[in-house]
Length: 195
Image (cartoon, rainbow, N blue to C red; front, side, top):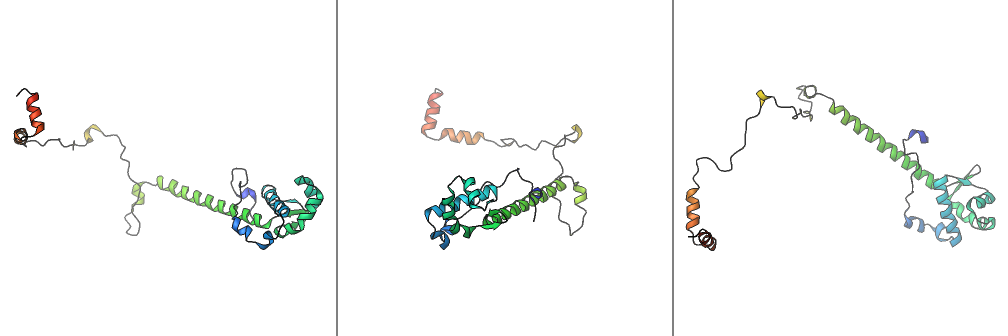
């Protein structure tokens, strides 16, 4: 089993455990509990999530929870179906299994992230001429040669821009045809020019 040191974390436990209410409500053990027993069950579960374990002795448990011993002793037997006694401690196996699952999941995600970063890091430092060895079995490199090199005056690129109006074309005929057309726009244009 991995220790807490094996998993890089933010220095704190997972803030919450996920539980589907329908799964708990469907359990006959839960449905047969009194309201006080249900309250103790969830108090103990929340305490176990935060502190991992509680004292199994009812008198010490009552002191930790801040309730009278007789209330704890009355409700505890039915609640114990959800807990185990390990030495002098009370633990919730269901929550510990969930915590282990979350730790393992977090470790897998961390390892995947590290591998992905190493791949990206490695591909940035491989020169293009080394990745294109000419082997037909090797995929072409995705590394693009830099296009940000400064242009030297003797290597400048020719001007490939095109003029808006091509040279040699005669637009005068089109303009004259437009001006001869009877339209309100032409009437206005002629009136404004003083024609």
